Length: 475
Image (tube, rainbow, N blue to C red; front, side, top):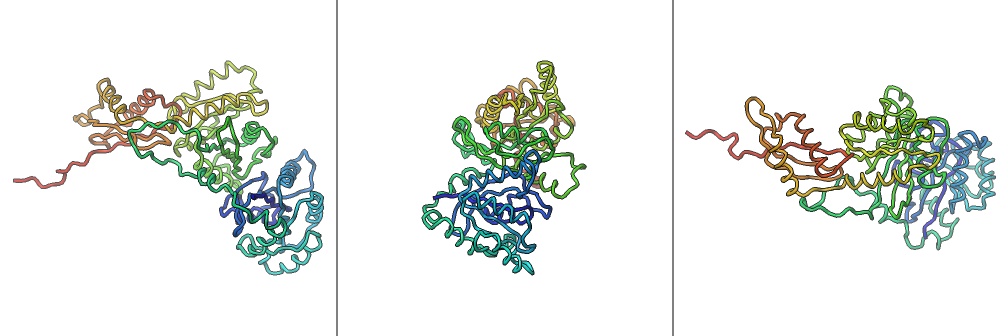
């Protein structure tokens, strides 16, 4: 049987390091700064022969509910309620602090089974902190080093003792097949180049939500899934880690990635913010669809366009969400203006889906998801070679390539080499001499002819090898 473990403790005891150790990947941001983690993160984990879900949480702090630390504590309390077992983590190196004793009482009152984890046990002088941990009354402390992987066998035995062998060593239900399916490499080609397969709506869909700080990304995800899953508030830059949330929309399995707000590179000075942005970039590369959340009250800042350009260069499929639409006084007039700006500022994804939403009121969310599915279909579309070359014949008749240095450029054929995003190979004479303006003309004509709005289109020029090139002329 599967079970869920929540890692909790005060800030800077190494909870995220232990989380990364258990999941086998560096998913959670780790830094010496206290309070790096803010949202709770859930992922499949393995501890020797045990398979379970593990929850990383924010550091437990005693604060008013209206403050950011107070809202972080509420997220941790939700994790405690969800969990079957709690890893109460203390720092053996620094010893017990007053907050450790305060929150040990909170954990005790929850009634959940607890394993007391004494992290950083490899440090000099950690023995004293290990002995102090007995004072919490949570049982025998298990000395571990999450950084170096020490003490994991003892931690495994403590989990089995806390939950029982039947619960922990039952049939493996960790959903590894599902995980493998969700981590399929992006951009795989379809074997038959002439095939036009039907759209597969059974595969999980990966969506990253990106934008500038305070655009409403976390609020939007909470509104979509219908629960306060992610930490939100008026403060800019609350989200630090890229948090994934599993969701089901109209029977379609979806994995949503919330990301940290991306400011201009010149403004990003702190190491922690750099790590957050790098984590967000990884989420973009892993996603299929990227929802760009724009603040409708101040849309199309320079940074918004740079984020969109990055997504397009990565080959992901973008969808724009104009958030905070409930704050707009003249919606019809502004909508017409935004549509004009979208087409003018993002010509490389002509026809991009752009939806007005309000994460606060829930307006426009279904329309947003319908646009996401529509864009995903286009991103996965394939056109047969026969149809492409019939289209090319008409294009060459109507508007042939220009002559360069007195010699006419020739295009022989075109074929689709890949999907996700659609990529095409054009066989022609002298690819280096082909003007970029004509390549754009081909791309835009192809987009219009085969109904491929709003996604990047790759166009590669190739020349056929001349078997006689380089041979000496016979006398």
